[in-house]
Image (cartoon, rainbow, N blue to C red; front, side, top):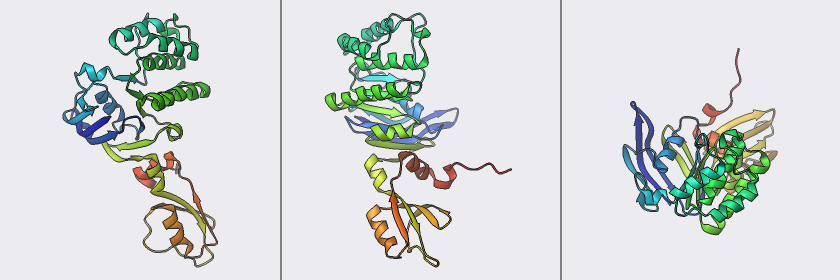
Length: 297
């Protein structure tokens, strides 16, 4: 669905994108993550046709996006800061979007209006941030897009509405093959909905895999040795910490292979602990350099 190859974008000599390569399968939910300043929002602005890359190629369904109305008609975009005209109501904005997107389905808009329960005649400037996000989802999903691009999509929504929004999005993925690209710092939430993840840093793609592959190739082990016990040689250790006799390791490799190797050294205790997407993010970015540090005075 999305193919980016060697994307470069500079602002006053700073490379916001520095050879970025990204691939998003059709019908997937792709989580784009990275530290602040990694280039996520810059890439998204290229994807929806706001920016034009200095170098490289970016395609949606095999066609370039920039100044291509037929491709843009397939895309719905919800930015972190919602755009609306000052005096416009939700219905006014829906009618405006309907005039721009031939696929807009007013019947679907009305069903979504019942679901979200907002007063469609109320000016959007008088809505809370969370209500503005709900209105944006209501309008965007009524476009019946093939690709939905989301930048911090559920920021400001209460827990119940977050679940409601994700439920409708995932229903569209399942029923219509909609592709979703979402950039968010809420990694715990992305872990529940994404099937593919791309980790960006310094304008580059650091790692891009399915979520299951990420979780299979980085393992957290807890173990304890009797006095004099040692680890086997040849382990690729990403992180090593101890609390008393309990040692915690983050290792590259598969759980089966690593537990077999370490079990041969006869530890008193050995356990595999599931890694969260947040932990994978920290250790793939550079381990100790990205961990939370104590203030030393």
